[in-house]
Length: 313
Image (cartoon, rainbow, N blue to C red; front, side, top):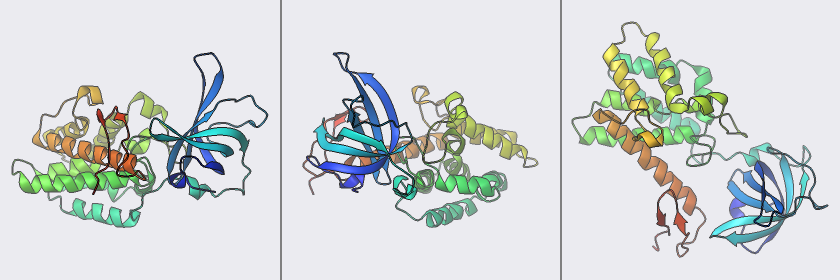
């Protein structure tokens, strides 16, 4: 079997993949077909079953491991699997670990680095608030280490939440060392905690899908609730400082239309928004360009509002 990142246009392929998404639709002529999103540890691939009622298509459901047979084609500068045969794979035919996208970096190494930033927070109240989850809560730590940062957009792999958080903290380290207006303790605490709500917004792999609270509340509100729990557990935590920490988390998406209930009002909130947005977009570009040639124009991208191509050198 070939992994998704090894597939090329023009190949005829038979392999077992995780059916991440299955959606029924109709062509303009009213003919039924199925949209699939196939997944393995190297990424995802759009699939089309143009004749879902044919004899070669056995019964299967979303989240099943399925053996597929068909052709790899190019559609709008993206690979697509034109599927002719499907059967549900039996246990023992596949290793589940091959289907969970995972960070390429050391999880333990990244977490140790994150802890080093926590130790640099000199304000005792802020440090205790961060340690409430990242040092003392063993269940949270294990969940955080293995969680993704998103369902599909950026860092959508196991360890992605940790990788994204550490990148944001490193950018905030630069900001704090460059702009004296910023309070390093507040910025570090907010950066480390800005996405903790994602541990409850998204389910574990292989689903990596929105939970009920994720749908109803979202990770920003969940994260603020978690910070409120930590603050209540720390005697004498200053009320104004608690509000400032919560504000940074509430405003880290920057704009109301991007999901933040409030726009940034504090310098630290502005810095956190810039760092979060920069890492999310650069990681998205990294994932878009992965396994693409430098000469290949990828077409208009709605997120970046531009036609994209890798640098030639």
